[in-house]
Length: 295
Ligand SMILES: [Zn+2]
Image 1 (cartoon, rainbow, N blue to C red):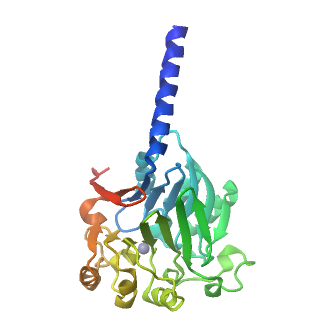
Image 2: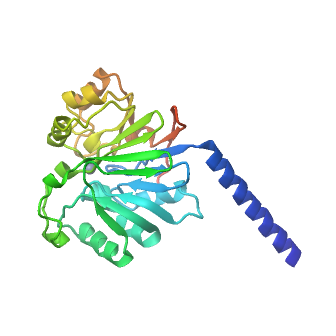
Image 3: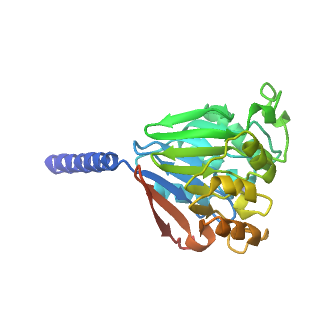
């Protein structure tokens, strides 16, 4: 009996080792735009296995999506980005902080006086995660993946750093969304949170907006974002819109869809395709879709 157990254990270890090696040999970056209804949550796994989550959706569905996508043996997120403290982007973050070891948290230095925001803040303090306020010009290199922060700058939230979080600058929080450019070989992804037109204009003025292949469309396709001058610089081949079916905001707006079509982008929507996956080598990405059964 002992021998059987031992050989089972060896087989298990061998399987684990082989899948680990295969994974790394493939040099694949995974990006999953989770279907979380009306909200945002994007999961990224780098070729060396670092896990990044950008936003945590409007409810606990994100937790379920994350659990299905991350390897079962991996309970650590290297980076959690909360682009801004609106509930459709942060709600599952409390449970994620409780269930995963979150090494680093990147967010704008802005408060939102809501129960979910305060709960996250409390949990962050308890877990001792490393909190970093996003600032333009910063970058992060995770193996061959580079992440550049394009927004906000400290000019957007002056004199806040030494204040208690709940006393800091209050909304409009969308104007302070964290915007990031991810580069992996020839692939460039732009993650925009709920960036507004004002924010897009600021980035244009600073000369930070460049062409990318893949754009996560800001603010679920709201008409107050993704304006034409911005799109003319970004010129995405694929535009992903994270949006809930028949949402009460009328997202995505017809004008935004027209602008994206006019620039020549292929539009992928989570309300139509479900979760949208990109598997990228250093040259290109392969896209696939996953429809979810109702829970
Ligand atoms: Zn939003």
